[in-house]
Length: 98
Image (spheres, rainbow, N blue to C red):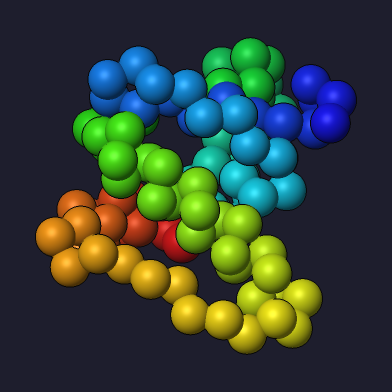
């Protein structure tokens, strides 16, 4: 995958997830940050920092982005969420508009 086809998502602890731009665009918030012409530094650097989202939660979000792309393409599967992550995931999903 070429660098311009990926985006780096950085957790509160500084862990970096490099995912496809297509997967990241599942999030309306990330899409706006990456496509706003000259509006966000994220669109120029190709990275988005999430100082309020932990590594564990951001990893699960990245998994969801890829799962969502498969679901859109007609592959119906369950997306498993560990009960102890539910509240933090709901708060992050609300922010990310996923």
